[in-house]
Image (tube, rainbow, N blue to C red; front, side, top):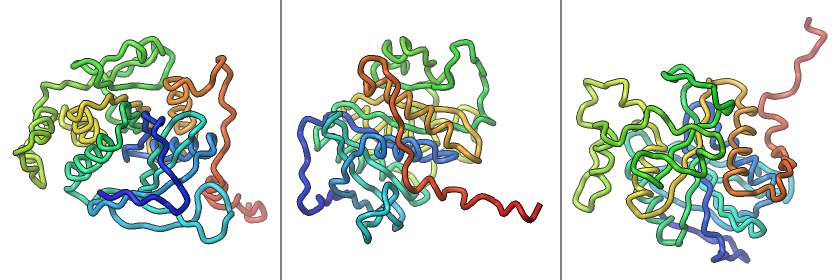
Length: 277
């Protein structure tokens, strides 16, 4: 993985926290990062190039000007006022190469001295086994702070640890072995023919990122919401709000004044022509 700094831009050393989406159902993590970048008016300082991420190109997601500025697969943004770095991923990883991508990204993050990574992702509502809404929050979390995935600060926020997480489960154990220097990843997990219910979570992109970052000694906090495919903009607001609470982005307890990204104005196209009804 290579980092290309844009002309005239610089990396600020005070930014030790990084926000990153982990692709999943509904693209909620990516939408939440878009919302955070737009609201914090973060500046794009460069982009990453990795052989395991599919190429893509598009229009500027945040504003119509300057003309000709294009969106790329892996973009790096900085908010100097909040001492935050954000990475936006706009295209998926090549099938079977998630472990390789996670290793490359973890190496890059550790090299640049990031101490805390906040992973934003979503989970399939249809696979939610232990539904518990007693806390009043739809946010779930997973942290590298403790071996069981718990974190005192997240608990104080009223969030629940991802109940299905079991570090002793076979696929989580398999991912852990791949962090060892001599381990070689397979294209498929060695027990694909007999998948169990507990195999779902560690098969998702966040699991590889979480495991490799944790192995590098980087603190990782994963924030999740359960959702279905469709209009997931409300879920993105929910996840971005949780990120703001975790990182203290709204001092004094005031709510964040969210700035909707320019690209969201056409996410579902224009309204229907009422004359057809």
